[in-house]
Length: 454
Image (cartoon, rainbow, N blue to C red; front, side, top):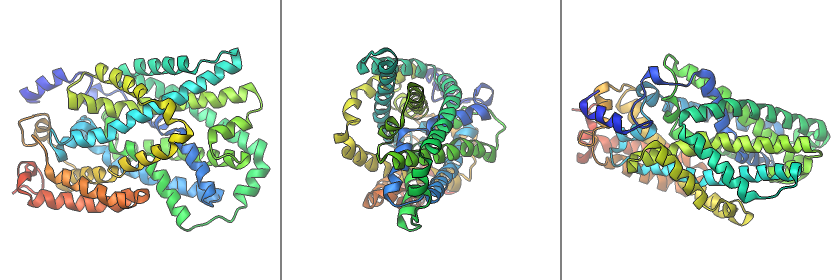
């Protein structure tokens, strides 16, 4: 590593500096548990129940979730390669295509929405703890449990990936057992209703089925962007296929199970909100505590894996913060998003619109990264090239306007139909980026080290 980057490494503590293979802490099993915890969310339950209104039967729902999840796994396995090979995070991966200053735009596009969801899910977790407290002790204080839950998450976040690994290993087991129990509950107590209204239903293989595939794929595209933030922590020696098997086993079965459970619960009770549906299904304290415990661990694992790491790296890169400072600030900002308002029914439409707008940028950013790594670099990143990404005065200094132009055009295309934005915007964005890199005079330095260098 050059002298410039030795100094950078000293400053970027617990952070943006490349992680050597000898210092990586995640084995195949820990990585699987981390991704399992990260993909479990109340949103997936809700999405499963929503497909019933679209007219799908159980088989069609099962296939839609499985196909959507598998497409997502392929995307993750493609986009994790840069960071697995180099040990550098998503924020640095972006510098290759966007420049040392331009990378802040896509980094914050991924990071800032995560803060909103961090607060949102923390409030749900606090509410679940409060409900357990009311049932066991008769004590009701949601604000106290919300604050305590957030403090615990911040303390775990300070530990970096060690904290995420610990929570993932434990949370993955708890969540898996809870999901199996909830599925058992749906089948044994409401089997007749589920069979009549869900299994024997004729369903449809038309647009609602295709829309369901896209919905379950789009539900987790955020983690596909910064997959490198996790793969850089994986120990060496794992091929793309082995890492892909980890993603597959952690995400596909769990997402399918969640979607099916959500659909069954809503079908059995007639309530679209899966949390309210399970509340109706609860007939004793044990079942209620298992259900609420599942919710608590789902929020905790998702927050640490998906909603803390991306904005932490974004802030560290954009504002030159230390890791500890970044995660504490993010925890405070999550509270400032007023999640008690965001979780209310009156905020649902606005939150959905917000989600659709920012996700319109995800396909274009992904397209730029894939085009840059697979086509312009042929999956080869030399130590000298990596050093240059950490040099504010190197070939990647400033902003690569070809990448910025590409994601802007891609986002406009995506916003024309936000429900399928990833698929409509990805290829056009990749083409704009490639030809921009090839022909724009301002990209001359960025072409060095690529297949376009003359």
